[in-house]
Image (cartoon, rainbow, N blue to C red; front, side, top):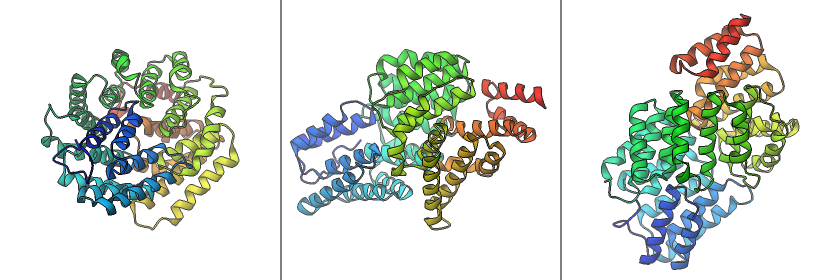
Length: 442
């Protein structure tokens, strides 16, 4: 937790208290994050770390028209540093924000890890390091980055449960399911509204195909998480996914309309939830109607942000599904241009190249060119994790590859992919259905 003995340059005691509450609100996905930050500024309009946090929140919005305001907030933090001075930790936080505003995600992750090396109880740095590891596809650091700081925390510390839930998710993403579930449940014992703890256990249930347990887990805790911020939609996505895997397709469509879709939201995570679920519903034979058009209307003005490769891929899929061919082609061209402009032999270059191949395959899939889609996606299948996202989220791209192989009549490839999938998820309904379909035609 970012708390004394950490020094906040020139900030009043009330401002520090309010800032700490803002960090806890952020870690807890609470709706009062904005109110907490406003209270911080009311106590001290020139608090350096408050300006940094304001800039981070603008970045999280991922709206092209708003992103420049993150740089404005960084400038305000730099001015505060000139007027009041700044600690080494505060300067590192400014550097982390600066890296993110320039799209240097790997650099941002390294900066926040360097903060944690000196200040392992800095909850804000821990959350941000974890966030960037997630979107850089670094699942090992999702786990190990938390494991390194956990010995420095105690149960009575504010935010300790959030550290446990971060650890639980990192363990899950590294297939350490039993330990992940123990830590996730321990976090919920501390705070039943810990959305990330709920989320971590839901992931375990998903990856182990314990669908009824997953449904019951999410339903039991719904009164606690359904009043949180937009992250509640992602928990509804997990609940819908469990119902989908249980074969309850019409219930999922109703859940989409009632609980996932928010006509007013332009949050990128909300949109990736929606896009992913509609595609999965179509694979289940459900007619989704005009819902693709509604999503495409939202995606179009946001796609210029080029925020995360993982998000870009979903946006390409949505535009193609809605028949917005010109816009989908334009986004793919922008992705390819980014790949060409990225210095070779860097992590970013590999990510850009993988994303270009994946997005080309997604366009081919939606246009009915299934063999072409397998040619694009197949060679990069083992690198798609570099785009970020979780195993459960990225599984959509694997399902698309399998479906394209089946539709292209590439039965050997389809069998190979399905055998690979059932080795880790032998009880998965989707795999079983495709294997039965393959057996009937091959």
